[in-house]
Length: 230
Image (cartoon, rainbow, N blue to C red; front, side, top):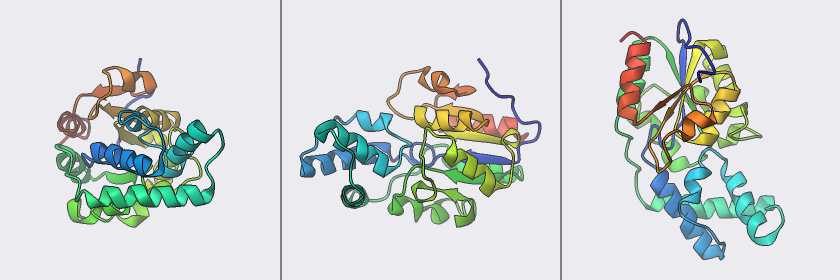
């Protein structure tokens, strides 16, 4: 069931980062698992794909609550996320997701504004954006974990993305690959394309509120070019 109408004129496209612009989720899951191993926290590799879109602090809080029955302290959130981030960075640069360059280019060519809306605060990826997508995501058009109080699935990240893009929800399209991100964008009132780039079952993004569910970023690039009249 379609929840939102396609914009008559699309003025901005709000992109998630991990699993949309970069094929980075396997590396994130490995880094979380290594942090858990060092800290003696119990976790399963696949669960981190389900947490995608949450801030690092929120994910750490889940792990600590499950193991110790209490909230994570701010010190624990900071220390454990630093470990995870260091491990992730040690893997080397995450590759650009196939189709992501074309998707962003379609938006820019149409005269629409690309905006980054990520739950990540991973500096090693954020620092690559200008090199990999020149001029597309300046700091003024980025929403990261450092910019929100409530991460995905709260609508706050995408609502802030609309503000940074200078558009209304009815003038934008959101692209996300995770149920929490899709829920965030949909709840913000944005026409949402869910892209299945990870080990998630078909239909899960539609169930989370995606107006369209697409199988890859290559297909998403073609769909954006069609929508934008390229």
